[in-house]
Length: 251
Image 1 (cartoon, one colour):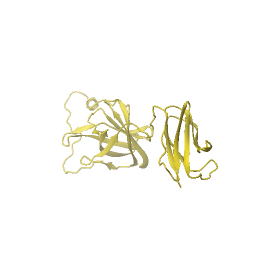
Image 2 (cartoon, helix red, strand yellow):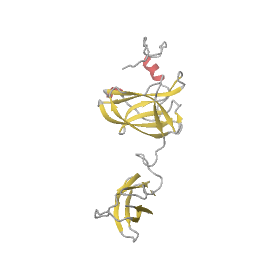
Image 3 (tube, rainbow, N blue to C red):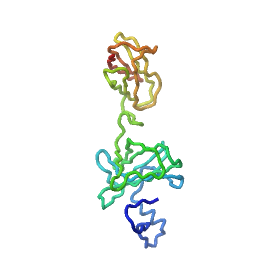
Image 4 (cartoon, helix red, strand yellow):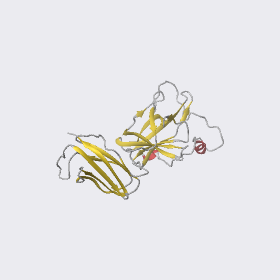
């Protein structure tokens, strides 16, 4: 499917082959660079597609390296791969990404970016719902992807050390969140105590995989009754890690 802003004759391919090398080999050798991300998709396996014309911002700078790779995924299944291409008339590097599906609409598309200089996969905090034949972005107004390292709260983020964050909001009424990080598989307990040292509420008591998560307290005790206004203490224990912080409930 083609969309053009200008009338005239379209010649495809846009270059003329005049060598002795077999055409298939010539096309293979015309690929800009090797795809070192390991991501691959076979378009023939899918019935529908969408196209995205974009640029990738990497920590504040537009990607200008043809060895970088932008990938589209449904879960862990790669559904599209593109590498930056320099377009002289715009003096910018664009990624022309085709995303494939066997569902005409509804699948959740997520994105990843391979930074060839750092040899690292970066996180892109955006998702699309697949809609067959959609066209996102253009050369004049490319869609901007922002790639960065995983941070607290991102799916898949694994901290380097155990941590217990300050609840937010604080003071609170009636609900507050408590963030905590696990660098390894651990049995975790997070509990609320009053200033007399009596346990009021057990928020978490289970084995969990590495990651950063949030526990929520709604101001109720283990019996489901609302507790009174005042200062409370929350305690986290995970393996040998132990930490204590205060929170304030106002009504």
